[in-house]
Length: 477
Image (cartoon, rainbow, N blue to C red; front, side, top):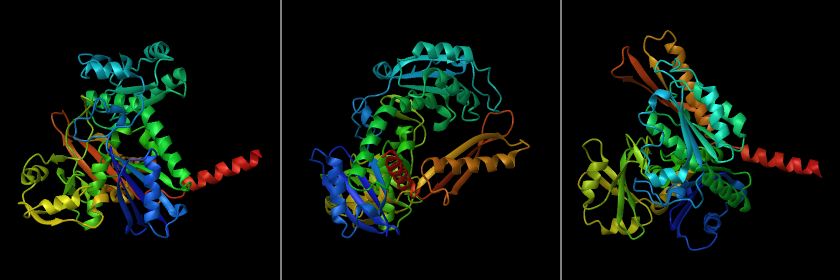
């Protein structure tokens, strides 16, 4: 029998859960963090709680973090609250689209944040048109000149091209040029990997991702070392993402913004598993028994925000769980969390779930029932343990394209590949949604194709790596 272990970490508390291969909860804990080696303590506690489960039987370990710790001093304006200790990488921003300088790179950033992150920025010719043709020729000479200017001063480079979500050709070519000049030690992030059509918000998100690569790598190294020290050398380590899915450590290091609000997302996923409700309202509680926020469940996953989200005062296209704060009457928050009229079950989870349920004097208006499931206090850890791995791909396509069917197939394959890069089992990845939405105000009918694929986390990769390392050491002897 193999098991999956989930750990949810907030500023001063931790929850842990172990589930078996059939997603049955075997053990849960909910603890205040008071020890120096807090993470190791939590892993020891949850393993001790699960009678008969050994570290060697743990197949996956997933951590959910409540915020991006490197931005603690300039917190995300999303209602989330914890940050990673560590330093931000110094970033150079490259925009491919010389005719876009009416809003220069990083122009909408708070001055303090811009000074903290940006070393240099430039606008060069390049980018794509909406139909995928070149917006203007890529300025190779300009890239070489800029690379020589920033050599030795940056830890990461963020490249953003006009409509690179349609075709990333120029971003990829620019990355090759810069990598040749700057060397492999400098991280290069490309905006088309983070989606979205809007240039400014996509650029901002890419620069923030680049800045977070250093603390994300430090945190990933710490998590992996702690898991290994507990005898789980063969367990694959994942991090929870803001949409209620998970990704491997190596993928998360280059997509750290996707971890924002991870504990809120996994709380919703855990609530769905613990109650069996796929459509519900999830009440998130504080440790003192007060209500914090309401999140809607849709298809067993948290409903996400639409539009932009500010991170450290920087506008991005990032989506996070749509939370309705409980500032006064809970009925007001319930109404704000819903997207349609009608009564829904209310599932109370979080460290103060028991006290909050006791404080309710009546069933809140707009709810069909109030649920307090067993293990509610550790719902975030349960959700982390059972969450799937997902990937997404999108493409803008004119409807009169003679290759429309071929493009549909290629987008579906790209979504499956994205899920596998995030750590999904290649043998079990399947497309879970596909949509085509029309774009307005264009000269010809055009749609955005968006496909999502999902699967269970991969198995055996860390075990194979461990065997290879051991074999290499034996050979050296």
